[in-house]
Length: 432
Image 1 (cartoon, one colour):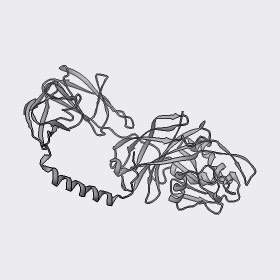
Image 2 (cartoon, one colour):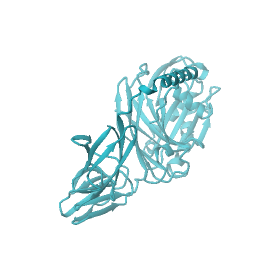
Image 3 (tube, helix red, strand yellow):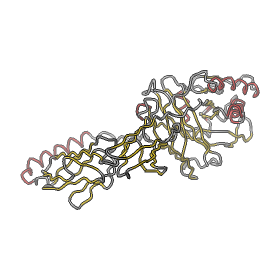
Image 4 (spheres, one colour):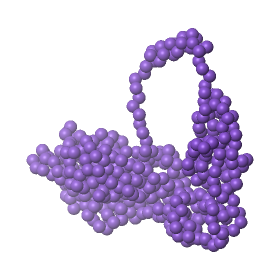
C-alpha cells in the first residue's frame, strides 16, 4: 500500500545554524574524536539453481547472524578486528569455502561472496508464473517457485505446484539420482469475465436522484445481470450543501469525473465509459431498462476482455474499527498503459436510513461508498505482463463512521485507466 507522510514546515535557518555550530565544534574538537570501532560486512549469495542458498545459516563464530536465509544479500555492522564468518546449508557445496576469516577495518566495508551449489539429491522447480506452492509426493514443502529442493532421498518422486488464480496443472514424476534434477511447469492465469460497475453520483436531498438510486439498486436484484458481474454503488456529494453520507473520498471521486452531479441532476457512469445524466421522467421501470442497456455490452464482451482478474480473500470486519481484506491481482494480458492504470479499493455500507428534507420522510440508501484508496499503478506494483500477480492488503478505517449501521458492508476493487477513465475490471465481495 502507498504511505503518504506529512511534510514539516521548512527550517532552513535552524538547519544552517546547526551546520555552523557543528563546523565550529569540529574545528575545535576534531583532535579528540575517537577512531570508529565498527566496520561493515556485505555478504552476497549466488547459486546456479533457483534459490539454492535459501534456508541456509550465516554465523560469526558461535553467534548466529541469520537463521534462515531468504534473500541474496545481507549487510552487518561488526566490531573492528578479525572475524570468522561461516555459511551453512545441508547437502550443498559452498565455495570458495564455507568458512572465511575476514578483517573488519574501522569505518570501511568488507565484501564476502559465497556460491552455493546443490549436491546430489536436489530438484530445481520453476514455473511460468512465479510464487506457486510446491508439493513433493503430495506433501507441501513450504517452498514456492522458483526454488530448489534439497536432501531428497534417491529414487522416484512426484512434484506438483499450485497457485491461486492460475489453472491447475498435472504433477510431474522425477527420478532423483546424481546431480540436480530440473522440473518446470507451464501455468496460465484463470480467465475471469468482465464485471460492470455503475457508479451513481448522487445526494440525499437531490430532487431527481431518488428514481435513479432505486433503479441502480435493481442491478443487485436482477439475477441474470448480477450473476454475470453487474452491480452499482452510490457516490455521495454535497448537493445543496447538505448530504450526511458524503466523505472526502466520494467528493474527490465526483471531482475526478468532473463534478458531474449538479443542478439537482444525478449522474451515472458504467465502467468509467458509458455515462447518463438525469432521471428522465422519473419512471423507474424505464430507468431500469436503460441501465440494462448500459451494463450489458460490458458483460457481453463488446468492450473487450479484462486485462486483470481480481480476487478478494481474507476479508474481515472489526466492528467499529476497520474493515479490509487481501486483493489478489492477476494479469490476464500485457498492460498497455501501466503508468496510468491504478488498482483501487473501496468499502461501502448498505441500507443507510436518514431523513430527507425535500420529501419529508426517512429514506434508505444502498451501497453507499465510505472510503476509496489506491494501491498504486500497475507499473508501481510490477504488473506489466500476462501472468504477473500481486497480493495487496487493503484496510479501511470505519471508527469515524459510527452514526451508520454496519449490518451490511462490502468491498469493491477496480482496475482503472486514469487517463481514459476506463475501468478494465470491477469486482465486489460482501463482508462477514
